[in-house]
Image 1: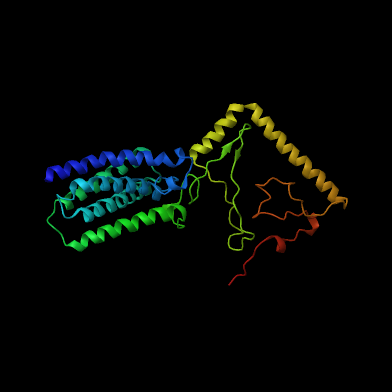
Image 2: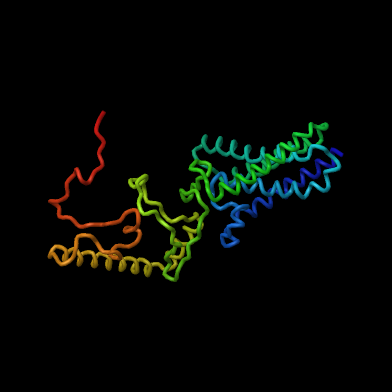
Length: 298
């Protein structure tokens, strides 16, 4: 019986590794469906890589259950122990080596992923062949698996502001949204609702559109393909903006237009809900005490 259980757990290493690799790309392949986001990696954060080990392991446990339920009385606690050990191993090994050398290496990340799955499966096997344990441990194992499954779904869409949930390639926490690249090589992003005021973070940096590294590369390649034409087009856009702004400033100096710049004069990446109300001022009216945020010394 022990040999039979070991074969099941060893086969699980291959199954979980392959399905996990697929789930790494499934969100993008699905067209960024929310249903798929709950199961697949939605960005490059450490948390999302833990998720693509958990769900395949849970699926494999469900496949195993009809075949193994009569051979062991510890199935649920064995699966819970092995499945919990996988993300713990990945996180510990990843942070240990990446902190030591200052960066991560893809080949090592993949090796850690597979090793964590192997460790989890072997521990699961060890518990499966152990003598009969108390019944409440199986109940505990089931509850633990349900709690972890809920956490992976919840924190996909509402991630805490912690390093483990942060996508290092985009500096964001939420699922990535792929931009549409138009014929001019420009990326168009879906509009997002912005709060009317920013009292808590007005002086912080402006959030940039969410893009994965592959999406940035796509935009860059589209620009490179146009060569000098791309440079000329964007230089022309910059010159057009400069001319419009200069013309408005001249009208303002003559008293023909208000000091506050009208909506649409500046591009959206400058004039937006966070950095807005751009107003012209004469040099002599610019006072330091009105321009800088100061804190009195204790």
